[in-house]
Length: 290
Image (spheres, rainbow, N blue to C red):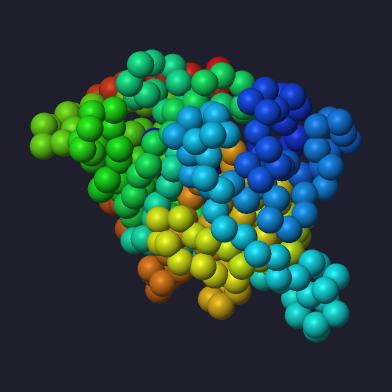
């Protein structure tokens, strides 16, 4: 429920010592003098990530990657990389992710992101529609398929991330069983800015395999702290995000709808169950910053 998008404003170096000994394909943070012994500068096809079932490298399947051009080679060709900036308002009906979060319960229900890679992690595949409006500082993700611990059983939910810094994951069904629950989690920050990666460091151009869509695309690879983002060369749109201990996100570039200047306020109005569980002035919200 809480994706890497929640923590994307925390882009500084993460000096956690890489406790799982993930290799440089799975994890390669932007260099920082705060922890110089941990990482050197990432190069093409490093830090690209992939899909996994657990924290062990034996279960990690890196995506395919072929170097196309370094920053200097691209410049020599008279080309410029595509800066990763979202539209201020958009809907993407082709949103996929593998969410990664610290395991806090046997069922991996408490999907709260962490600032470091310490601990044992859950890996959860989800897909749906991404609704974003920077003008209202609000985000809603409609998960039509969300893997649960029960075999062949999906959860259905709506995830609200609002301008007051709270998130409300409204779980509506577990399989075919109605499951009306909507805890409130207080993070203290609103959704990620549409231009959060405008100052990211450029790694270079790659020919990359795109999970869930199962295609290959020429992309520009950018890095900011532990976060990686790829822009699609053909369309200029953000296609892929990855952070090794928060998640992998895919945006189908053919399913962006950017025709609206603003989304209806009703998109971000909380259902009664969410209002009830938050309490007046969000007094029952869980502290998600711990």
